[in-house]
Length: 86
View 1 (cartoon, helix red, strand yellow):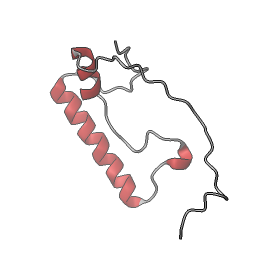
View 2: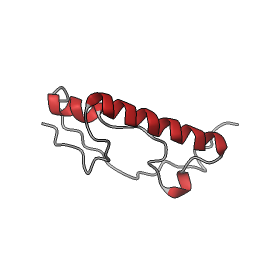
View 3: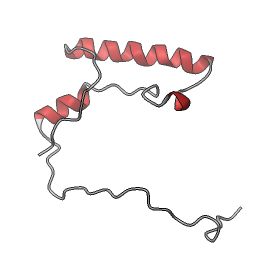
């Protein structure tokens, strides 16, 4: 089925402004990224993964995150905010 542009006009929902000069290669920024943990469960409740396989994956994500943080000698915690990028 072809997308019908007349029935579904684009709607602007946001404007992003990204500074041209940013430094992402600082030791602080690298440490911040290294110590984050990805999990699909960082979502609104209505978007949370469902089902038994996802419950099993949740345990694996958590265990791997704990292991990586232990190997990096840092506590496992949620970031309170993104650090300032120069």
